[in-house]
Length: 326
Ligand code: XMP
Image (cartoon, rainbow, N blue to C red; front, side, top):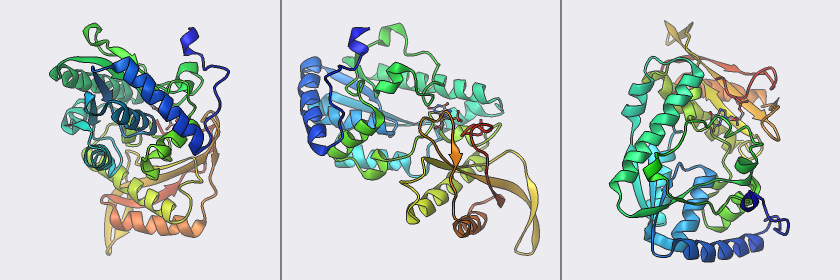
């Protein structure tokens, strides 16, 4: 489709000046498209939806309603940051939906990775649909579609295959970023005043920590994933690795091994650390993390995270391993 091809004349947005020009152009276009009507946006707190939200807040203010669904699989501090940035600082209409129990109940006992993904995707649509039905007079649905999503060359969102909203909720789409590449979205987001840890964050899969809590998700093991991930991110940030390594996170497999804590024998989970670099996520190499740092992180994780007695480092490039463990 012609209107889904990036115009050849479009300059690559690499500087604050070019970002400002793009923003001005989009503000005019968005106001023209939306008029005095209402817009809905599913705001995950990821780069793309956050930048769309910031643009729309500037363009149409309270005509935008953002819905943030907490499915219980977000990283530590993420829902809080979405509320802080968008509701408290940008004064947006933000509906926060605590759907944690709902998702975790649906996922209970489900071990097969693709089935977990399907449940998370389908439940997300259901929750979002319920929220959309509570709101009156919505005519537009904003989405953080970016150019690689249109080209379908990026593997990152290729797992999304869960259908969409029902027919009567097919609103007219608002997709201000659809011709931008990720690096351009980041420049625009920075220029819109979003915090750096939101704009320059590493990729995070839609099913979130759910695919890092290997096998059937349990609340206690999920907590171990979340807490160990928070420690890893904190230590990578402190040690200058956060902006350097493409993706880094922890995994908690669903088996236990013996250990010793405070002189007593334990039977607890291991935490696996994964830190990889890639251009396109099709192949990946493993980051050479300094050994002393790994030792320090190991001490923190085994000391601070409940139910964990061992830390492993995944040395496997892609292939043969995928980046995620499921
Ligand atoms: P793999 O594990 O396939 O991951 O090597 C490649 C990239 O894709 C991300 N990923 C996902 N992203 N939904 C997403 O939005 C998913 O279901 C999903 N699975 C993997 C992964 O984090 C990595 O960046």
